[in-house]
Image (tube, rainbow, N blue to C red; front, side, top):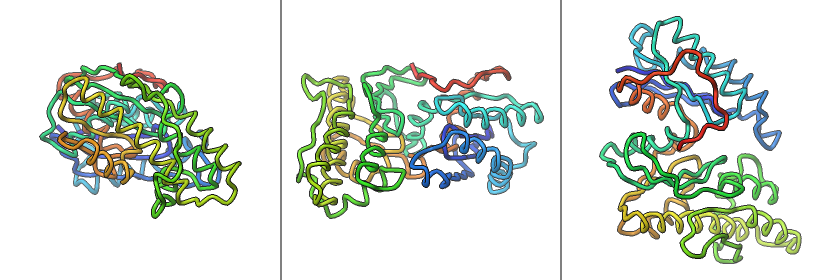
Length: 326
């Protein structure tokens, strides 16, 4: 089956083509215009999607050697995400589906991040634990089977990616904050400052990063001449330590030997290195770097799984900015 995937949940415009479980073409365009605002401006993001979606879809089809007539389905991010940006992608996808007479599938962005790991490792088997960690979500999922997921824990406040962005702002770094803190942390001592690790008692699987962010703010107020490499390394380590410790607890609780780490923060190399050390003896899977951030390859792949099983969305399906996974 040949499925076109479209992703516009935030500030990445993406299109991809999946054929029989393999990605044959994938394009991503990041909206750098938001850097000067220090964060994503929803209205600008929506307009940027509308500007480039048509050409991006055309280019991804040409790149994959696929004509519109060969497409057998369309998958598009239904949620969660920003309302305006979701509307841009969904309306485009619906128009294309109507014009070509194709079935359409609204895809849960979070579920797609989990399934990106099947692209990274086709031998991945159920059940497994997924640490889904991004700018908007920090969650632990027990993935028992296709469409059978149990939430084990999530953040009570800020997501890990949000903690990186806010921490970067405190340190005077650019947006997005995660890559900036990661660069600044190179050469720094991750044990120089003992920033707090919240909810670390009794194998609690929930997360909280708001106190960590406040601790960084107070530390910088009191230490004007602090070594910023050490500060960044210590702040980053506090986030990573909590993430991987709780992933370890989730694996222990479920007796799973396999875990996947998905979402934009999964691109952090220190997180990858620490997880391999901390989770020695477990199988740890990361997606490729271009599958960590928002992308259409995971949308097309998951959309094909659903469409090939006879599922499809009604043409009037709504966007769901706060869409849940379970």
